[in-house]
Length: 529
Image (cartoon, rainbow, N blue to C red):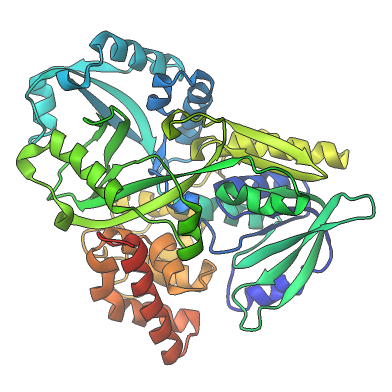
């Protein structure tokens, strides 16, 4: 799948009428494309940048109900998300994995412990289950050696889940392709097409990976706008009022030896009492997130969002409150990243109080799905495809309430640890066996202290639609986020694995490497911007 020449093959087939054209290659668009294809619709998905380039590779890495949303009384959003989290845990094992959260309550927070006790109980009942508990100071200290104990009132423990967001997107898209869909990254929908009745009937697509910037028209019976934070950009051709509020959420990643966290922590920031998280992820420690309005001026000047210095300071302040003895500072940061949330504007002053609910609109034949959370992507896809089928006056050929992901067996290979086999099974699904079989001598060894084997780089370069080096190192295998300097010291070995598979000349590799390091420094480094 997506072998050499795949872009030319798909491009040559675009100039025809599809049942449904999906604009947006994040988790929402991926979910819509997969479900539409399995319902018997001829489906085309296009993404202006790389698959999962936007919000869906920059999330908090959680499949969760959003415990903090209870504080804002967004009970419906939390209920939907908790139920979807439980389904993902059942249907996407080894990719979506359980994660225990610990919620220490300090007197400085000014939050009654009985209120938190009620919250974790309600959170469990929404699942429904009853697994939360109260921890003593001694039990908490046993888990978190360096955690602040001063003024600790109590601690509650509850369950959520974590995942690799970009790998979820890739797996859903690849399953969509196996179901009959076509999917193309670096294909930007520049303009919507309209028929004689004024209804949207396709889009002009530009090949952003071609040197000549070629264009073509892709016509479709129904067009779905699943472009997340860029929803209004696509809708602008309709000359309708904007409805979105872009909120930026930033995160910091630390080495686990410097900030050891065996389980997740829910944090109330000491300044404004906003809920945040610290969690173990991919062998590192991730701390976030912020919630600030994203300036349009930044979009004009920069290609990607990044963590501002005030946001970095804000996160470091929260860490220092919880772990004062560690004296964590900016020099300890391995990397940073920021994503934009597609929030439907509700007109409230505080970004954190905006609703995370999703909505489906039909405007002149353009079906827009926006808002929501990564955790609820399947519910969003289901409601969108139902709207598509209604517009087509068709019934689905398949089951519109099917599993989130195909059921796959963990592959077996003599001498390999089960942890590695489960890891690859979760991230690559049915292709995990191909990855193992194509690995060369020594390529199943881990990269540094990460769970990823070297073979993932070769397989991604060969079969996962990589167009640029940052696609490979920031979204297919997350080395740029997990290793110091974006993994710069490993680039010579990465080159020996990836360059032959990508078919790049020496000059092309040098150009891509230079561009990747510039992207990392500007958007993912400890001091971005």
